[in-house]
Amino acid sequence: MVSGYAAYGFTLHGSSYVRITGTGDAAYKYGILIDGSVANTSMGFGEDTHIRDVEVDHMEVSHTGVGMSCAPTPSCDPTTWSTSWKMYNLSFHDNYVHDTFYEGYYIGNTQPYYTYTCNGSNVTVQPQQIDSVKFYNNILTNIGYTAVQISLVTGGLDIHDNQITNFGAVNKPQHQTGILVGGISQGQVHHNTMLGGTGNALEYFGAGLLKVYNNVFANAGYDGSVQGQAAILIADKPKKESKKAGGGGRAAPVTLSQRLA
Image (cartoon, rainbow, N blue to C red; front, top):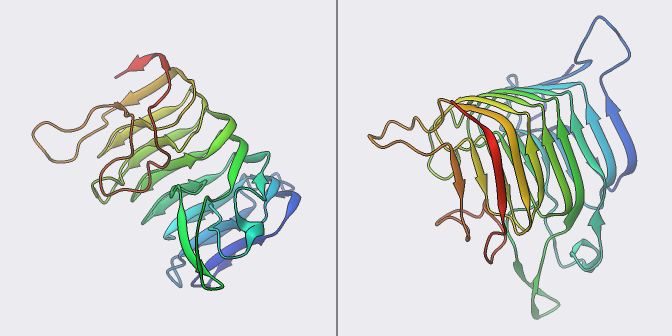
């Protein structure tokens, strides 16, 4: 168990070809526990700087600000820009994230551009993009903000067989979605179950074909208003006052084939 640290419970910097797994003892499904309740830990698990080919599985994260994050922010160092580095082959599966104040998962930077003054000159740069993300067999419950937010995945995103309950628990507008796919992402969302939340069960702001099928979305959008919110939101531009939609331009086609409860 990891506990008592205010900033991060577990973090990777500049790492490649790494698997972090809680398997090994059959008595524990989640062999790694990060408990943020003691020190109000801001981030349960984080990946930063130059990351690629990382797999995280069978980890439990509870009572943190954000559960897990991989969203490197560029700086004046050119090696942190999208023109110099791309993340490949990220995998998050068989994890249990619960009782977070903010997002459950924050994967991919959601701000499309950053402007800095470097060596006396203004430069505008883009954050690192991700080639592919696999996100499956995860359980999330009692998530304060958006449960799963994944952006800037240009090669392919596969989100499947996840169970999400009680997302957007603090009922904060613009931050209360079950699964958000944004920022030039494309791929597929299938065989997920999302039960109960204050916002949309699924939001899409990407820029490629997204296939959505065989999901169960139930009791979404109960934000306390008379009209509530829809189970699915597809938009062609980022939402007002939110950088979490990412990207720009018009959303590409979405195919929908699923059960809505």
